[in-house]
Image (tube, rainbow over all chains, first blue to last red):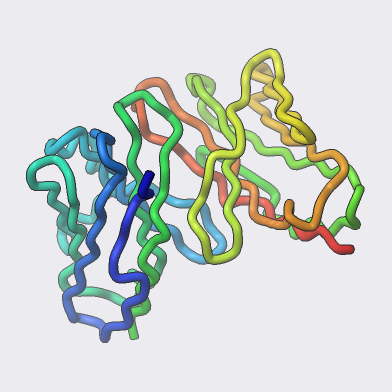
Length: 114
Length: 111
């Protein structure tokens, strides 16, 4: 079974530029999560989708971050404009359904903002 | 105050040693507890769930103390392959599905 796929794996951009990350969850997983992990810290939830509905986006900085999950499968997370403090690893995870606590993580996108 | 607090370590132990990690959680309404493992520059993966009565999986034993809001992980007979960061994870029932991760405890097992 294929795992969670993310692209790109690495991204270096200058501040004020836009950036987008893509995630394809495990087939059949209805719940999709985006996390941000800063160096030396645990992942922090940005947004959670149940199918195509964003059900928990309270931690998403909505002034510059946006996300979508069209058709309830793939998802895109965007930052516009990026700031130096956005440098982090952006992790996508999926689980079979809400309330299933085992989350399967993708390899992440390592973002560096210069 | 953070939801989950962990000593970041690092813990450096020889092969065969027994090592224990602890974490505390702040919200008494927390309902589910886990340990995830994260290898260097890799994604987190579920190591084990933590049950109220305590549970064991091979060389790994997890304990939960709800009264003290404290979770532990014991690794016996450490292997080189156990070198990783161990993340303490908590779920609050009111936000079903949202996991709160500690910052992780780094373990290095040396030969």
